Image 1: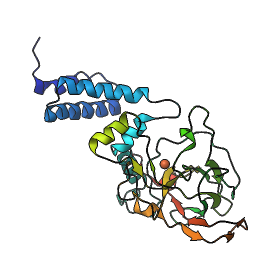
Image 2 (image 1 turned 60 degrees about the vertical axis):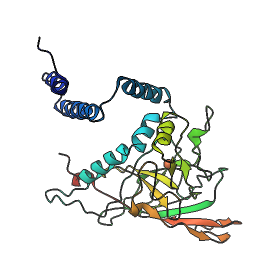
Image 3 (image 1 turned 90 degrees about the vertical axis):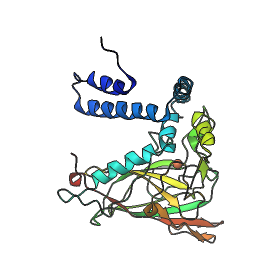
Image 4 (image 1 turned 135 degrees about the horizontal axis):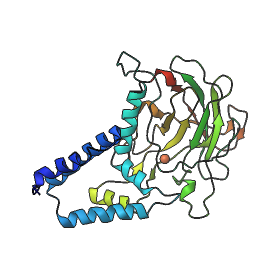
Length: 302
Ligand SMILES: [Fe+2]
């Protein structure tokens, strides 16, 4: 049998996939092998370094459970999550036949590691904050299609950390859902709810990803944001955030998720009567944002 030299190994691995019956899988694995081999060659990876990498990935997997997803954090902090989101959205909003990408659709951003399936369905106008620490904020706006037609009964999943930047899932074994809900737009496509003004926070940095960030000389912080996920039948799903306009770290988000079009002014109001008639004895904020969804028939699926 012919001996393989270093430069031939990638091609030999790729050739062994000739019998694969899944063309997309084969395409992905071919590119992965090609780039991975090129990477090892470029940095002349040593045996110790490769073992360190394997131990790092093993530790990353061991850190994961139903409330902690270290692999999502790794993908997020390497900018890969945002790259996947950007590629998918560019494909999805491409108008059929024209190749044009510019549309007024709301931009997507990363989902992050703190989505928790099964948030309570609450009526419009509800206060998601409960006893959670944080400054009250009134959120309102509309959901329309890209032509401005309202999207009624659109499910909106909302979640955020508290006023100290801590998510409910980070409260250990007995964590209870907090600051998250599922709402639906009214007949005119409007939504409204109370929550808190989100603050900047560090991504969990007590695991392997935190060690990686420190070795990279990076901070772990994300600018203040609230997560929104819109899933209306007949429209392309949208997972995004609203970012707080005056938040620190807008220019150096640890997960590279900031889009300028998602930065929202949180107006500060003196104590008094809020737009829904609620009387507050302390200052509160209001944030207004209109979402624009792309009909699912408009996307290019090829
Ligand atoms: Fe977040």
